[in-house]
Image (cartoon, rainbow, N blue to C red):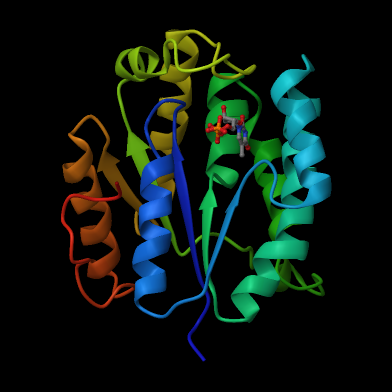
Length: 228
Ligand code: TYD
């Protein structure tokens, strides 16, 4: 049985992750892998209910961070861990880096508290010792779609009714982007930075190159123009 593979997709709103996630799912399926496509906050019925609250209701920054991690705990236990145990490829639209970027960078919430929550929520076995408590589930690879906040705002404008985060200022997204950069600096081997300002087919090439380089896909996908 193939080993489970966990890939997350990150970036500020408007960076253009969505079509590429679908394209990557097809590429893995074409190579015989079973793919679980999922997202955060959300991914299970309860976590999707939390998503509706957290994306639409005004709330204090700690409440927001706690709800993100509550949804994540549910998502990990009910969906992500079982899929990885079955040897599937889990493609997750956002994960914990988003909490560090949005609640940490954007809202200015303390990173030490977020780190504690990350450890509590993502430990993979009951912590019987400090060492066990330190084993936390993180993606094998995180594709960070890096785009200047001004460009992202242009792409988002007029697209649809914005949610609580999408309607934030360019300045907020600058802080979110700095939060992502700090997360990447802390775990450079886990991240691949994608220059999301490029044309779509070039973005797709960067993504497949990062994945092939790590041996997760055996060959380049036949089409080099990316998902339709
Ligand atoms: P997004 O992933 O952009 O979904 P859609 O494309 O359907 O709008 O929306 C999720 C929003 O939630 C996004 O603005 C980032 C925010 N978010 C956080 O603030 N913290 C988190 O931990 C996560 C997972 C998301």
